[in-house]
Image 1: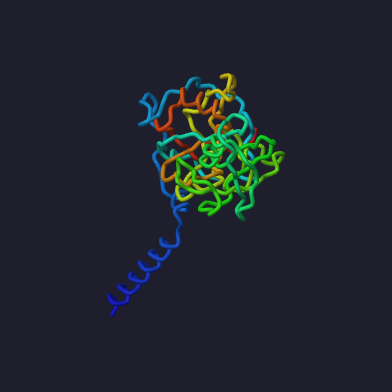
Image 2 (image 1 turned 135 degrees about the horizontal axis):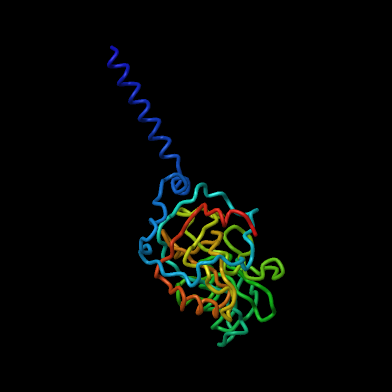
Length: 266
């Protein structure tokens, strides 16, 4: 009888563990699962990493807003993520026949150059010739023009340019050039502060001046940002071109959570 009681107790314990595991989200597992630490001194760079331009940590372009950031726990290397860039197109920089952009309820917001439409439907946010900001509101809109690069029909929302000078992210807050990154929320929870060592010392202005401190925050997402993929918001096409020369897309960036230097706004 004793062996039967012990067997039943073990079976109940196993069932409880299974139920607990099923209740976890991918985000909570990401927070809990141990990950490899930094490579030992003298070791070569991780796969896909590129050397930094400078080792010193310069002042950030714009402080990270602690009110919308979350604590990622102890410092941990999450791995090498595929890196890409997105920016903030301006209607005045584009040409083409007038093309309407619509709100989610299919009201026309404005008519814009076709080139701008084809850029903003991919980038997600942009500035109209009037100075107003528009940002992604809905896909599969029956009234919208087809986006050539994605094949989707995107509708937008007109935003207050004073509150959202560079557009809005997945957290509903204003996104910030060279601070905001888009992630897959099932891999990196939105609001997580991250440190990108290869970004340290990179320029923070289009003329090549400034020195980035490597700290960013995950506050946006994209339909094509899946798995270990990080999409850095540059704010302009010129900045995208500059960073692509220094840190080419798809080369891979080391992503670290819980970095002390990124824990507080400076």
